[in-house]
Length: 185
Image (cartoon, rainbow, N blue to C red; front, side, top):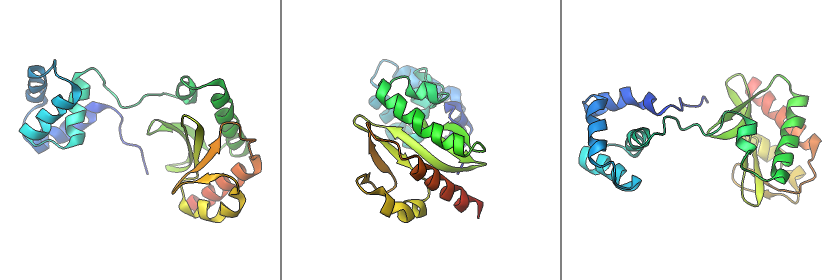
């Protein structure tokens, strides 16, 4: 599963084709409503011109100066806004994984740090207010490792770990290794 182009103007050819007008027409529509709040601007495109939410947002956000949906370029950028405790935990988790599996590429996808093998994501993570969520990406991995996740809160596709988690290095290595094996099959 590949990440979409994060540049908002990547949607412009589809917008022109679907709504039958060059982008300048839509920029002019935005200009007529430039002083309004974001939601009202999006509503103009949706209600008056039949835009989808995604296309309306792409035009409005682009015109408001947001040229990309990408918020972070790398792990350091992602961690910048988080506490030192959260930073240390995330760095430890990714350190364990990338040391054990140097062939994995560490990327930011969907504005979250991930690791992938080729085009396939095998592990991701996100930092929340009171915990960190880790995601092995393949539901088979979660199912198979369920017995080893005692004491951790499980969601449908993620594992919630506390900020003070004593990183279970072997668990991470084994989960990511299983994820690699599944994408390599």
